[in-house]
Image 1 (cartoon, rainbow, N blue to C red):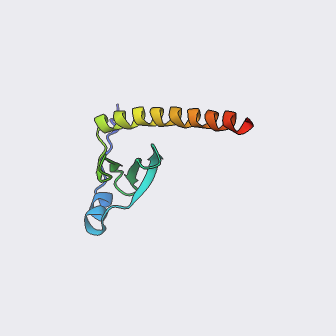
Image 2: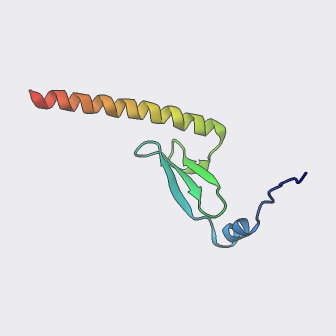
Image 3: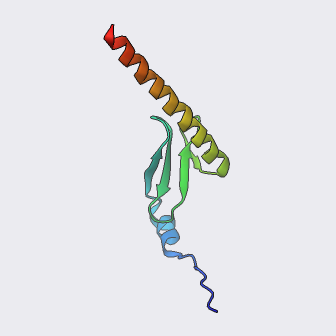
Length: 88
């Protein structure tokens, strides 16, 4: 039987060490909270309550999921209110 082991490539990490990370928005949680991923080394970050970038840990991932659900519910309720108030 062959074992398939994936060896992590060091080239993306070396690239990021030399030139810095190339973060791209991977998910918009709310209009001011986003999740970012480095296109080379796949490192994930998010914004904290002060607006600074921090590493995306499982705790922050769970917080972002809950925050997104609350935000989407509030936006849906806001759309319903606008629709109802525009009739009158």
